[in-house]
Length: 121
Image 1 (cartoon, one colour):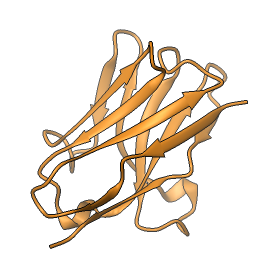
Image 2 (tube, one colour; image 1 turned 90 degrees about the vertical axis):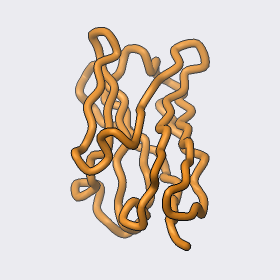
Image 3 (tube, one colour; image 1 turned 45 degrees about the vertical axis):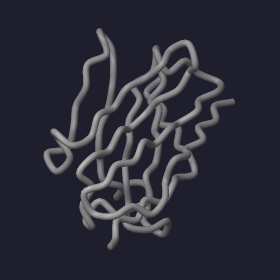
C-alpha cells in the first residue's frame, strides 16, 4: 500500500523560503513520476488541484508551472525515498495546501494528505 506524507508547511513572510518534504512508502520515488500540486483549501476536489512541479524519468527531468519557475525546485532522494520542494521568494498567492503526488507504473495516482503553506506579513 502506498503512503505519502507531507511535512514542512507553515507561516512565512513574503520573500521567505520553505522546504516541503514528502516521505513515501510502498513505492520507489525513483521509479514513479513524483509531483507537487496545490489547492486553495482542502475542500477543492483533487481534479482541480493546481500543478506545481514534477520530477520524472529518464534522468530526473523536471517540469514547473510558469507561476513558480525560477523560484521553486523539486528534487528526490532515492536512498531516503523522499521528495522535496524548495520554495523561495514566496508570495501571498503561493498560499495553499500543497499535496505530494506519485504516479506509479500503472499510471495510478497516489496522494498525500497535504501540508498548509501560508504566506503573509
